Length: 495
Ligand code: QV4
Image (tube, rainbow, N blue to C red; front, side):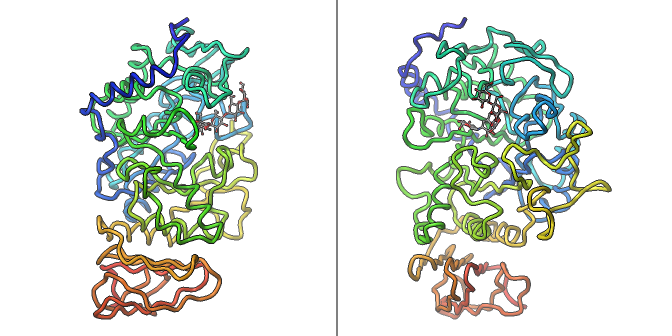
C-alpha cells in the first residue's frame, strides 16, 4: 500500500505554490500553433479506423484546412465483445501496445505518415489515469489482466488504494482526495504520484511522439493531481500540443485553474453556455462567450459544442448535437468566434448511449469502414438515423466556416449588432462578417461590417448567385432566412 492515507487538500495547495515557481513548463504545451497553423481547427473522428482516417486526411481534411484529428485511444483495451461492442471499451486500457479496435501499429504509423503528408496532425486520446475496470480478462491484443495486474506493465503497488467505502470507488466529487485517489467508475486508478508509474506512462506517450503524433488529449486529467500531470508531460521530448480533460462544473474543489498552467484545458462552460443561450432564445448572450473570470483564457481553452460524452448525456447532457436543428448555427458561431481552440465532433449515430460504432457483432465487433470497397460512407438524410457515420465535419456549413476562421486570422470582433435577442451579427474587423438569425422570420437589415466595399459571396450558400453588397461605408444589405446565417469573408468576392 502506498503512503497516501491522510492525503488531504493541503497537497493541492502545496502543489499550486510549486507550479507558480515553475514557469518553464507553463503555457508551451497549450500553444495550439504547434498543430501547424496560427488558428488551428481540430476534429474528433470518434471511433474511426486508422486507414479511414488516413484516407480522410487526404480526401477531405487536408483540402479543407482542418489541422488536426483527435483519434480514439490507440493502445490495447478490453475486448469490445465483452461489453456488447460498446464504444467505451477504448477507455479501459490493458497495455500500451499500439493495437486497438481502430487498427494495429502498422496501420497507426501509416495513418500518422499519410495525415502528416496531407498537413494534418494526429492528436491521441491518452488514457493514463487508470487501467481497465478491476477484474480479469484479456485485451484486444491478447494481454491478460487480473485484479491490479496488467500483463507485465503494472501490478498492485502501482495503483492507488484509497480505502474508502467497501470498493474504493469515487462517490463524492466534493472530496479532492476521493476524486484523485479512488477509482473512477471502478477503473483501476494508477498511482501517478510514483516516479516509476510516471516513467511508464511517459514512455508510452514518448513512443507516440516518436511515431510523429502532434498532440494529446489527457483523459480524466481531473482525476490526477495537477502536479502528476505536469511531471509526466515534463518528461516528454518533442513539442506536442496538449489539452487536458477537466470537467469543472464550478462547485467542486478541483478546478480547471489548477491545470491551465500545464497545458490547455477543456472549457466546459462552452458547450453549456452555447446550448442554453440558443435553447432559451437568448442568442445575444453569445456576445459574452469567453468573457470574464469564469472562463479560461483563450490560449488555454479547448472549446467544443458537444463531445463524445455529453452528446450522449454521459456528463449531464444539456448540449446541442448533430440531431438538433440549431447545431449548424452553433458550429458557425464557434468557428467565427475567436475564443479558444475549436474542436469539431464527428459522430457515429446511435440510439442507445452505450452503442458502439457501426460494426459487425459476428466478427468481434470489427468496426465497419467509411472508405473503400466495404465502406458505408457517411449518413444520408434517408438512412437509419440510429446507425452510421454522421461526418459532421463534411457538412458544407462546417467546411465553409473552417475557411472563414482561417481568413479571419487574428482579427478582433468588431461591430456587434443585434435585433432583439435572436438576431445577432458581428465582424471580424475587416476580414469577415457573420449574421445569425435564430428566429423564424426572415431578417432583412442594413448591418455595419468592417469589410471593404464590394460584392461578397455568402460562403454558407451553395453558390454565389446572389452576392451581398457592402457599401463604401461598410454597410451590408442582408437578408437572413429564419434559423439561418450569412457569412462573408474578405477573400470571397463575387467574380
Ligand atoms: C460500472 C458501474 C459503476 C461501478 C463499476 C464497477 O456503472 O458504478 O463502479 O461498474 O466495476 C464503463 C461503464 C460503467 C462501468 C465502467 C467500469 O459505462 O457503467 O461502471 O465502465 O466497468 C467512458 C464512459 C464510461 C465508461 C468508461 C470506461 O463514459 O461510461 O464506463 O469509459 O469504459 C467524469 C470524469 C471524466 C469522464 C466522465 C465520463 O471526470 O473524466 O466522468 N470522462 C472521460 C472520458 C470518458 C471515459 C472516461 C473519462 C474514463 O471522456 O469517455 O469514460 O476513461 O465526469
